[in-house]
Length: 208
Image 1: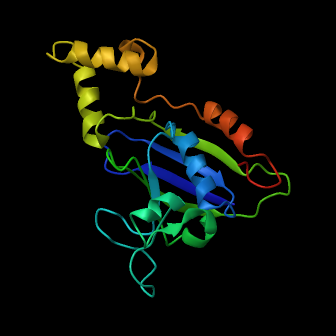
Image 2: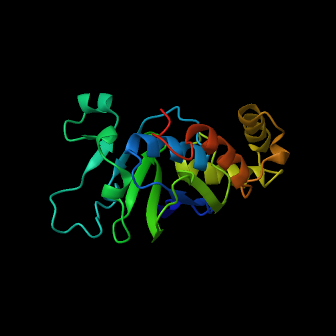
Image 3: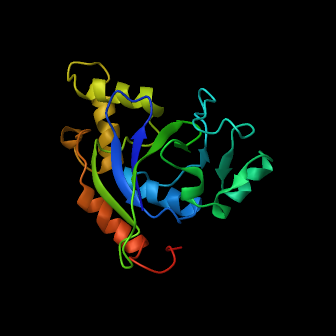
């Protein structure tokens, strides 16, 4: 089992999760895990990379050739160098000295960094994925990435702002609740773990 910290990169609003995850999960299943634990809606494209997409920097891989990316097969129509995410497990591309990057929504560019905190043996009936703790609710989708989300929070916090009413209406439409109830610091690991139990059983093959 890998104890992994998943953090949203570049955000001044702290959004992170500490997750225990089976290293044998294929990356396409890891994508499904990250959607649940972060709180995304899985309505946009995604890809994994062993280098920060913004800097190209790789850690612990100096002996290998250029940066590698993994994603769903249909993306190879536009990127012949893309490797298939369903052909490789998390433990092969993520280790203590080797972070992994996960980009969700190529327009808004929500970038996540995965770092291994600890590696331990797993019990025979242990759940394959568990959220230990975390901070910050998932940003709202289609908000213009990190900068757009921070702008949203700034306007919501200022009732005198000329766009406050417009932003509040948008948040209410997206969440189904009044904007006054929107709490960017709120994260409930119990909700995430309930969803994970449905998708990833304690033993047997990963849920499809």
